[in-house]
Length: 155
Image (cartoon, rainbow, N blue to C red; front, side):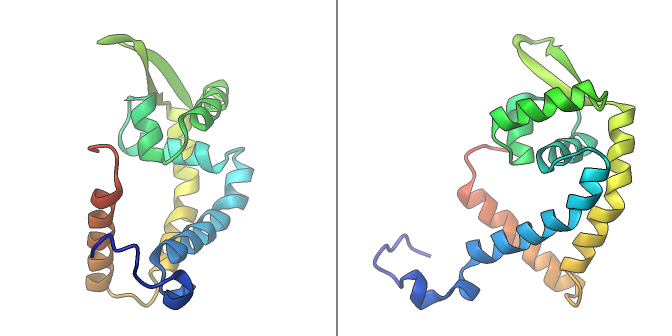
């Protein structure tokens, strides 16, 4: 697809055919479906995203964690302060760069995430209800290609 700025206007495309609008609606509903369980655990969306990423890729520097968690670094820093105070993550100085801080999930953080995971999985499954495995795989492959097109980081 070209970068043609003279193409159809949003009104001509329509919201229901505009992928960014649909992605925002889907993620808004997904996040809303988690909100009650997050609140019960004293978590917010940025905290949950940090724990989710750290449960898969632990011991990240803050900047990389912010990219993976899709959270502004300033917002993430505040979330990490609270997570650390609650004993869910720990900060350590990077042994290779004393200016950098690494974030690791604690056993308590892993347990909190595991408590939330069934709700996340249920919401995920609900999103893909009626969509067969091949269609789901094709959709995820398309999203991965789109991420390559828009990303600013190599990871």
